[in-house]
Image 1 (cartoon, one colour):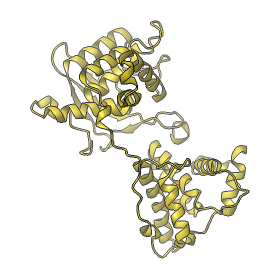
Image 2 (cartoon, rainbow, N blue to C red):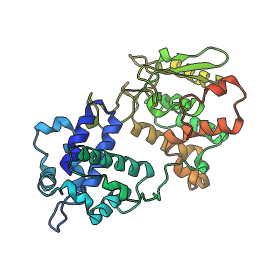
Image 3 (spheres, rainbow, N blue to C red):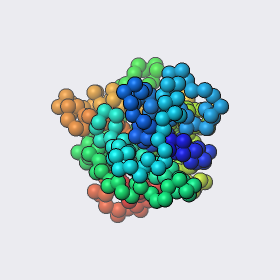
Image 4 (cartoon, one colour):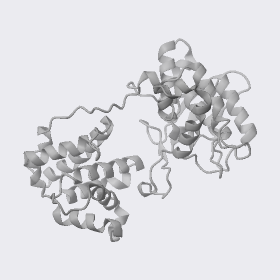
Length: 355
């Protein structure tokens, strides 16, 4: 069954986004533990998960597995269960557990379990096409409600004063000469004021910005640069380059921005300029801003901005995740204030009804 899953997902690989590829590998790795023979003298669960994540990458097909994965890869090759084993209720229950829980026994996030189930279901449907199964046995598995929610808790969203304090505190992170925090103030600001996703903000260019001296400006978004591992992208870089979420490949999205953000971006360009390719935000070497960089800066900034009691509260714990919460803060403010003004109404473009 593991071979069937690898084969069918290998066909999806060339056209899949890097994040999708990573999801495919994670789904395959999770169900592999339930689809191999279990014995005492077998590789560890961690090793059995890493082996299919390596093997599913098409370019690795011409290489032998790394030394640290040889035992796990060999075990999967020799002890993978037959496709028909999915008709066994015991195997199905184990598959359900592997899909819904992490290795430490805690529930997986709802989206994670759904992604894993989709990965397995794709392989099962392929097996049915090849006459290896008569029907889909997954329909007999009742979906387990995950104890881990993907929904953002409204209590973690900062108010206007806290947001201003956090953005100001970013400029105090790092030394003055290295400008570690100062060069990222505008980066967090476009997430808070304009609701940009981090993958949209890292690739924002001067040509995408209309920044008048007075009044509202406009950011016109064309693509995203989501962070994945180097092994998942065609370029071998950590950032993939894709079109906008839920849009056609060449479709753009204009985002009106208020005067405070216009002023911040104008000041940013005056002090730091732009990268050679026109990007507004860069790391210290002029490259794309990595997720680890903006997470660390935001983590340090909250220690300056929040009082000890707030740092110990749910807000203090959550603000280490700027990507999700600044993005959601904008949406919550819009919903609370209504949609009376035209610029505000246009800000909704690009956000799902769920958000």
